[in-house]
Image 1 (cartoon, rainbow, N blue to C red):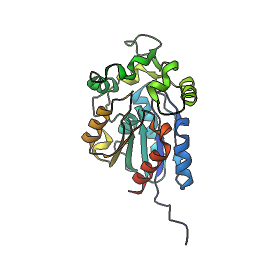
Image 2 (image 1 turned 90 degrees about the horizontal axis):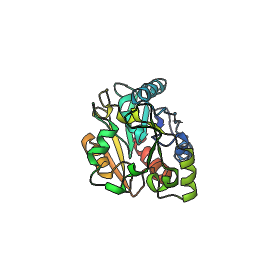
Image 3 (image 1 turned 60 degrees about the horizontal axis):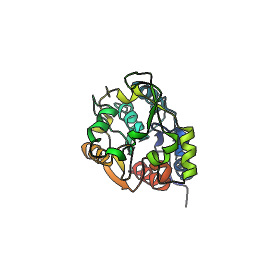
Image 4 (image 1 turned 180 degrees about the vertical axis):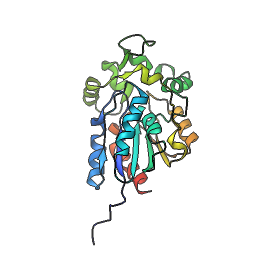
Length: 243
C-alpha cells in the first residue's frame, strides 16, 4: 500500500497562553509530527493582545495551504482575532481557552464567573510586579504554588520547573478588548473544557463553547491540558485536522 496523500493536510499552528511558552507543547508536537503533520508553535509576546494578534496573522499568512489553529488559554483570544478573514484557516481548536467576542477582554470574562469559584480560583496566586492599574505591570503566578494553581495533575517536580520558567503576562494584555470580528463566527471550532481548571473557570469555558457552537470535549484536567494530557490533546487536534 502506498503512502497516504498528505497534500491537503493542514499545517497545525499552536499558540501558548500566559505563564507558558512553546515548550509546553513538546509531547503534543512529537505526537503530531510522528503522524506526518507540519507543526509550528510561535512565541507570543504576552504584553499586548492586539500585537500578539498581528504577529499571529503574519505567521498564519505566511503558511502555504490550509492551517488549523490551536490556542491554549490566552492563546485562544489570539486565534480568535488573528484568523478573522483569513481564507486558509480551516478550523479553530480551543484548549481551556478564551474565545472572546468583539469588545470583550480576559479580565471581563474571568470576573463574570469569579464569584462562584472564590478561593479555588488562581487569582489568589497572582504575583504582579506593580499596580494592576499600571499597563506596564507584569503578572506572574506564585512559584511556590504554581502547580496547585496551573497544573495540579502532573509530577510536583515537573510543575516546579514550569513555575521557574514561566513567562508573565502583561496587565495590558489582560485588560485589552478584542477589536476584531471573532473568527469562530464563521469557522468550524472545537473546544476542550478542563473540568478541574483553577485558572479559567470551567463554567466560563462551557459557556464560551456553547456560545460559539463548538464541538466540545471535556477532560478531567487542570488548566494546562497540553502538558497534563498531551495524547488526548493530540488526538483532538488530529480529529479537527481530518474533519
